[in-house]
Length: 294
Image 1 (cartoon, helix red, strand yellow):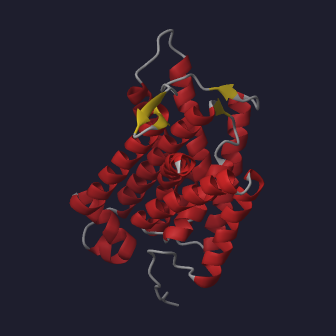
Image 2 (image 1 turned 180 degrees about the horizontal axis):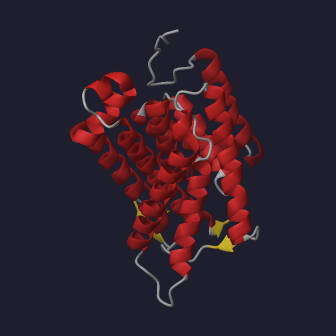
């Protein structure tokens, strides 16, 4: 049982990271129906931002400040990418936007290679990896930070979307852009806000991922980004609650597969879930089937 509970804690840790990144996918899709495959690379840049601000000063900045700065820079990066690469493609065929997203992903990876070089950087120890005893289980402090801060930001996002005026405007734009414009909502501002929030949360996931594995490298966001995409589809892409649920399910499946079956099978099982979801329930667990006007 101790092994089971230890794996459960690891699943919550991994699932928290996937959920944060999956939210970015699902928010952008919910607003402009775009699968932003560059989102995993924004996650990677968020990790690099944290590495830079953790290494550049002769003294160590508080970890919360490093996280906030990394999220802010990633948010700005997300807005710029939307303005430069996606804004003019909103009414273009979806395949055009999809190809552009893949191209942007490759561009960001190669930009990171050019700036930071291919050699992995060692992330400084921002959060202690020592353990605390909880009900007889040794739980790393880093894991508590990851789960706690991730859940906190998810709660704040949920309150923002449902309780604030910009959040209600985001939901309105998601439902019907033209009607939202007629009601006086600035769609461009809402799209930029969506990219900013999604990119910031992706960066948060990237920071915790790089701290957990103690490395930062240009392709860091590829595999976690793809798994977060699977999580978004599983939960119901376009649904924020679904992205959170999907992230924790994928994190649990990967962790328990690693712990009880084999590390070789973990990725295969995770990506096979995407195939089964698309075959049998394309709308995902919490998604709704919608009819598309032709």
